[in-house]
Amino acid sequence: MRDAWKYTGPIFDAHTHIGSIENTSRMIAIEEEYGVIKQVGIVHDEEGFKQAKERFPGRFVYAKYLSLSDIAQYNVEPIIDEISKLLDNGFSIAKTWFGPRWRDYVDNVPSDFRINHPKLDLFYQALVDNDIPLIVHISDPDTYYANQYKDSEKYGLKDEHLQELEDVLSRYRKLRVQIPHFGAQPEIHRLPALSRWLDKYPNVVVDTASSRWMARELSKEVKKAREFMIKYSDRVLFGTDVVSNRGQGNYFSGRYLAQRILWETDERDTPLPIPDADTVNTGGTFINGLDLPLDVLRKLYWENANRLYFR
Picture 1: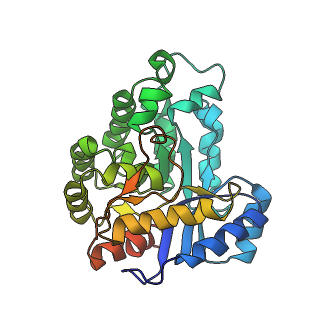
Picture 2: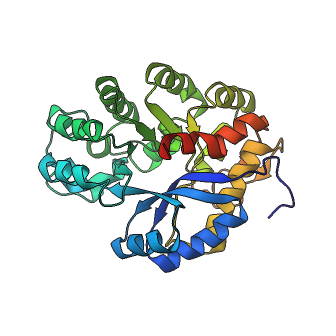
């Protein structure tokens, strides 16, 4: 832990995953060392959810993981019913995950499945009608498509996945959407497309999870990345994607440390403090800090998420 940071205020982590109360408590203890006092908690354990509400009142905005298999099989009726009860059940946000690997976990997927299929219209409309924001993961790093998703017949192509999501955004302008991982487009060559999304869809925000992906890609061209962050300073939420039941202390602290170096400092070629499997055989990942202005850091770390989720 460093002695001092450029930004000294509170931090809202808008993308975390919580399980048992023991693991969640351990995670929080480390987060607080880095200034985190509020967070979005994507729930993976019902008992842990109940206990977290009692033990940590006011800390979490809870996100409900909607059934992947029901959505993938266009079985929208139970999902719509669940959405109608989210607020009463203590949730404020819905979460769904369609990173390409989802096809490894769901059987009997219709051959025509896509997230912009008309059979899912009632699902998206239910979110709008109940004023429930949606966190939707739709794509992964370019490196994954090159290495892990070579079977495009099974996993599809990144540009196709992004186009499906954009079609949903264009049809549901009142749906509040948080797209993780910088809209799955932190690669420098993709920033113009992400800029177009943010210009065209005012209902969309992106978060900065995951730390290694952000550090790896945005460090490649500091000037372009810094200009993007300043221009869209109202539309980016700080997030780490940490999962409470994974790893030891460095799993958490390394992710916070990496992003704080990236956003706050002007350091050059600082080794990423966590493993990066995507670069382990090509020399590793190094952070080049963007040294963002204090007013941008304040929005990134705190103001944007509070504005969206504590209305």
